[in-house]
Structure formats: C-alpha cells, structure tokens
Image 1 (tube, rainbow, N blue to C red):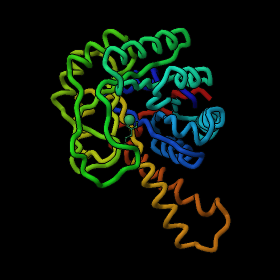
Image 2: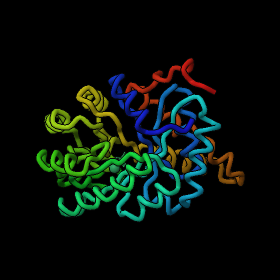
Image 3: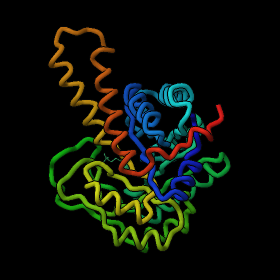
Length: 291
Ligand code: G3H
Ligand code: ZN
C-alpha cells in the first residue's frame, strides 16, 4: 500500500530498525523492490533520482510506483521519495505530482545558500504535508561506480550539520559521514560522528551510499540510530549484471519478458537481504493491515 514516509520512519524509530530507501530506474526495479517487501513483510521506501525521473517521466514513474504499491504490494507500506533533488523546481514538481517525501540536496552550495534553499523547500512542503530531507557535506562518487578507490571521502562538520538542521527544521537529515555513492574499498561509517549527530539532533538520520559498506558496520550504525539507508548501486549491479548474463546466454531470444524476468528476481534477492540486514524484515504485522 502507498504510505507516508513519516509513518514508516516513526515505526522504524520505535522498533529500532532501519528502512531501506531503494533507487529504482524502471518498472522492473520497482517490481523487484515491491516483491521483496511483500516476501520479507517489510516496509520500503522507493526513491527516484532526477536522472531516473528524466528517463521514465515524472507522471509515469509516480503512477508506476503508486499502482504497484497499491496493487502488487498491497499488504506492506511503501513510500515514494525524491532522492537528491537539486533545485526548488525539481522538488516543486515532485510535490505537485504527489510525492509525500523529498530530498533537497543543496550540499554542493555554500552552507548559507544550502540553508536558504532548504528553508524555502521546507516552507512549501509544510503546507502540503510533505516530508523534507536536507543534506550537509556533499557525498562523493556516482551511483553505479564500483571498485575504484576514492582518493578522499570528505565528511560533514558536526557544528554545520546541527546548525543546518536547527535553522531549516528539516524532517530528516543526511550528512556525509564517510560513505560514498557507489562501492569503494575505502568507504566506511564514522560511528563517532554519527553518534555526535544523533546526540544533538532528534530527527531521523538518513545514511546515503549504503552499497559497499560491511554488514557489521551497517548494524552498528542502526544501533546508533540510523533510520533510513539508501541503496542504489547494489540494485543497479544486480539488475544489469543479470541482464547481461541472460542476454549472453539467450542471444536469439526476442521476448523482453524472458530477458528481464531474471533481473527482477535478482533485484528482489538483493533487496530481501538488505531488509534482513536492516531489521525491517518481518516488521509488518499483516493482522494490522486494513484491506
Ligand atoms: O541516494 C542514493 C544513495 O545514497 C545510494 O548510494 O549507490 O552507494 O548505494 P549507493
Ligand atoms: Zn545519496
């Protein structure tokens, strides 16, 4: 069922687990996440980047996610979220299209400009009952990059994260704490910085760059209060590697359904593993679901 992210995050906070925010790129990845949520009895956040919106179209992706959530995954809560919205216009369009949660990522701007733009988004969102995630300390890397070592993974400054959150009144905070977008040998989670941020701020913390982090670190981060974990690259890799292999093995096949079904399953498998790791698997009590 389509749910508001604030209810999903509230339950996760009470239950001491994290919810995965999974990047999707097409109908097949949406189905993979939805099937995983159903099988794992887990809430899920389905998120789209500006790039994914450009590829699928804002209306089509909004309708695909809401229709799949209402019909395919009717017994589990699923929220639709804009990931790394870079401008006021892009956030505005998603809110108008019916998203209940947006990420305004102005972390590439000087802090005062980041605060100003985020405040404008919060003001718009409040009147529409939309949740806003803000970000401090730009994340390095690119979704889908695998295997290269990043020379430097910069981290956000605690004082800036705290001031930003207090001045903007965002509903959730994302900050660079040692992870990167993609999978890199030297990414990690600075648990001390996370601890300090969580001590100072009582709002949900969103961990970006969730692919490529050792399970043990993810578990520690959840214990320290990470509430939402973004997974992008692991989904791209599962989908694309499976598709490439399927095409190599079936060079004469012309039916896209036959070529794409193994990729849906590969996404489903990866997402179920994440839900188990994050502790969100089994958290949906089917008795509580009104149909
Ligand atoms: O916003 C999306 C995420 O932060 C994805 O990061 O590609 O490292 O999983 P990832
Ligand atoms: Zn991210």
